[in-house]
Image (cartoon, rainbow, N blue to C red; front, side):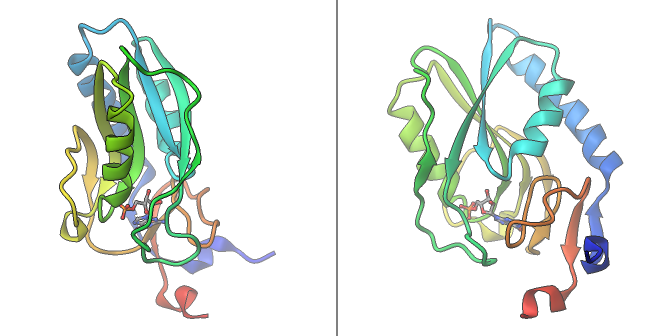
Length: 183
Ligand code: 5GP
């Protein structure tokens, strides 16, 4: 089998940078939710699963874990703009403090759609926590309450983020060599 690491052009965010920022974010969350009894972490699949797992383990306050899957890029590197819920949340969120956990905000279309959809279910509060954001690509204004890192307009992989469903396992965020996208 081929070595996936041979496809890396460069590492944008190292494992240590992500670990240390995640610990800081856990502190920010603890502060923000100090008056809450319990928070519902709502992980956006698939990309959010690694961040969710590490963030959750860095948090010492009570929280539950739920999942939602929405359509994103398919196998290409550009968004179609259309958003579809593939797996919906089964739990009632009325009167709950809900925190959406996302891997990356690119155009913001996915989160904007999810936000409106979830707000209609009348949670007590709804906040957004994203590991990455590409500010230069935002098309709609979504309030990111907790953000790990701003990144340049590069297609990134690793730490849950894929290209053609692979590379999610990299324990860092990387940019792939241009030839990987070629064929
Ligand atoms: P948006 O709706 O904000 O344009 O896109 C959100 C989704 O697109 C993310 O949850 C992610 O799945 C995908 N996406 C956006 N930018 C990137 C990127 O640089 N790399 C990868 N792997 N996925 C991305």
